[in-house]
Length: 85
Image 1: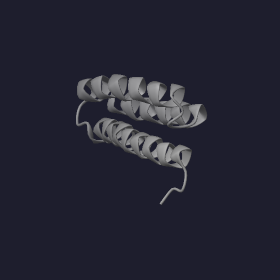
Image 2 (image 1 turned 30 degrees about the horizontal axis):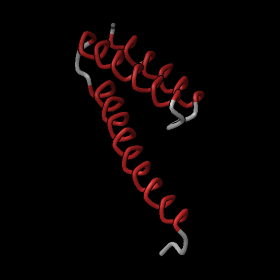
Image 3 (image 1 turned 30 degrees about the vertical axis):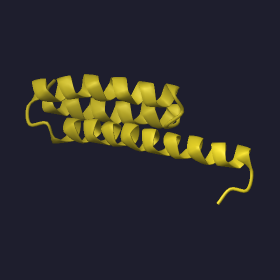
């Protein structure tokens, strides 16, 4: 347990951030999975738009590195192109 008021506040803040980051990361991973699991090109293209938006937002907020977001978008775009979208 924290011994000072500032340590207690830091504990509260970090727990709140951890939960928020966990939900954001979960949404992101689900969006990426939807792109990979899409059956037709139209569905994949729509899922890619959503995933791309979430990747950019996560990178801007520091949840993931910007190069990770860029690499993921490139790989997903290649996957969507292969489906014909």
